[in-house]
Length: 249
Figure (spheres, one colour):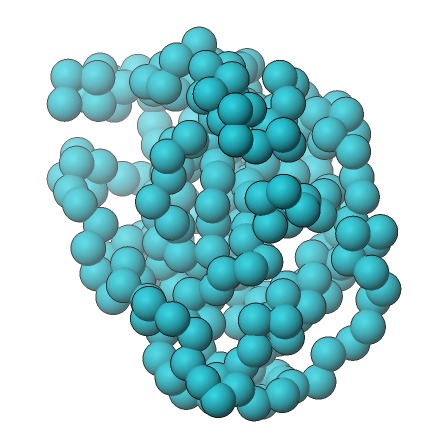
C-alpha cells in the first residue's frame, strides 16, 4: 500500500478496463485509490474454462503461413519500442517510478488477462490503446463472420531484467534484450481464447487465424510489429511510434 500511495503522489496511472465499463473503458480515465487497490472481480474475469463444442466453421481469409507473415525480429521490435517505451526497470516494483504514465491492463470487454507469473500488467498508454484496438477488432470481425462470444487472451506484459532472466529458464524467446521491458509489448495467445458463453462455438484454429487477420491488417496500417512465437504459442506484438498520438496525456 505504501508504494502505491507514493506512486500516486508522483505520477498518474491511466485506467484500462474494470467494473464500470462506461467510465473505465475511457482511455483518459484516471484510476482512483479505491480502483487501484480493489480486486478486479467482475464478469470479465471469469470466462468459461473450456471452449464449447461442437464448433461451427466460419470464413477465414488466407494471409499465408503465420510464422512467415509475422516474422519481425526482436531487434526490430526493440528499435521501435525505444522510441515510445520506458527505460528498462530494475525490479518488479519500480514500475511505480517508470518516468512516464503507465496504464494498468486488466480483463475487460476487449480482452482477458491470464494470471501473470513473470510480468506485471502495465503498458505505456500507446501500447494499451493498441491492445484495446486488437481486442475490439477481433470481436467485431468475429461478429461480422456470423458471431461467437470470445476474447483474446493476454499472457505477458511488462517484464524486468530479473524476470526475463528467470523466464529464460523455460522460454528461449525471452532473450536478454526482451522488448517487454519497455512497456510497449504484449503477448497474445493463439492457442487459448476466452469464451464468455457457448453462443456459436468456434474452433481454436479459426479463432487463431481470425486474430492473424486482425494483426495483419493493423501491421499493414503501421500500428504494430508482430512476431509469431512457437515455443510459447503467442503473437508477440509491439506498438509503433505515432500510431496512437492521442493515447497519452
